Image (cartoon, rainbow, N blue to C red; front, side, top):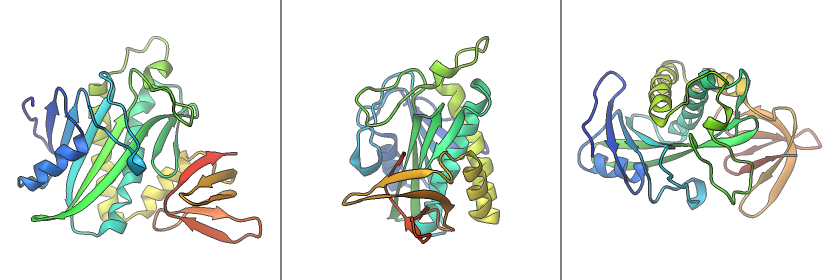
Length: 250
């Protein structure tokens, strides 16, 4: 592990290589850390995404987890996946064409319609309170093959004449923007977060397919419920709230 950096945005623990930044955040919490604290690694060997999927940890990409101790419960804490998505999008914005970055429910960041970032929240009750790990992976330099959706990396979209972006630059940008949005969420609740997220969201008002573990739903992406659930408008006009699933545009 490399030395920590302090500051108003929380300490940063930087590693050359690690199994999982989310796992390290949990280990640190068990050792007494309460956050805010950010774990970052140059390489990750056992990263994971939603539903136990593997998130490859190639050097040059960004792997980080924010550790927080919260006074709310898991349902409200889930709002922070939207905070993280906004932070990643705003960190990428200066390096790519205007309007290129969009968001896909529940927690993907897209560039030109292709996934470049994923977010995984994990929570647990520890000896010092309710802990939340906000895991963020960004394809900065490379993107994996064999994924069931279009994938890209930030480097492929950097504007001509702009310097190449690095994981370090993106991390500092997203960390700053995360804490800005976190403060808004803590003071004003989820509504302003939802509004900002929807302003960037792909597919609002359009036909979508939502793949659940045991069924597939089709309808129109109506918006977000106050909880952050996806509102799927059925052909008869009724609204079905989806709390977990994979969205495909169709």
